Image 1: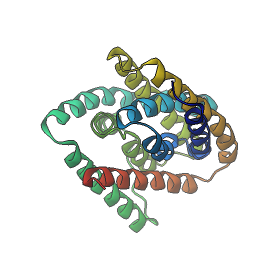
Image 2: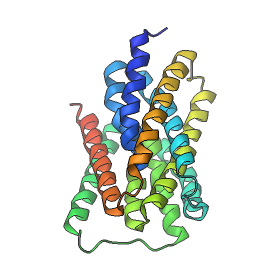
Image 3: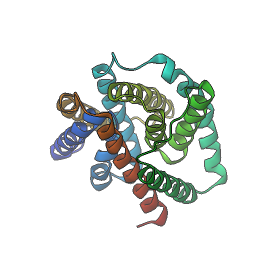
Length: 247
């Protein structure tokens, strides 16, 4: 049984991360990841992050339940399924550090591209085929390097959705992808009572913080939301490069 201070640290750490995640609709798990790496065994980090992230996504989806659109997300859901399979198969043929290095540079390139085109933003067409491709990329990166939120953030920015629609759609997607991950981990017998109890502390903490974050995010300008998403994408890129280079 973990000591009480571990549960307290997870609760309050995820509560702080939830403030940012509740306001932006993305980034709770990413913000809390350094705490998980610091306090948990490497083999437990992804399991706990998945459970905590699933609880966080459920709460944000409920908070923005009137804003997500099934029509926006259906192609993403469908595209994610073959993307998850492709990502898992790629892990057998390509080393994880190589994938992390390549994706890290792709994300940094997108950030530079966006900053250089601030006055003339690129917009993706409202097309099911584009959504399927985006879903495939989200599923692929989620299964291969455990960061599905970065390509999702790029897709949201390039679609130009308003603030609430962006947050609602992103949170709904995370419920989908995290739910699949939790089921897969449970089927593999990885969700022990110890992992479940720590994950529950993370989920409850994130919900507490997100309650404040959602209130802070009301009325947020779309450009501010996109800047926050870019910050999370940048953090994802540096985390991938850090892991790939073994720093």
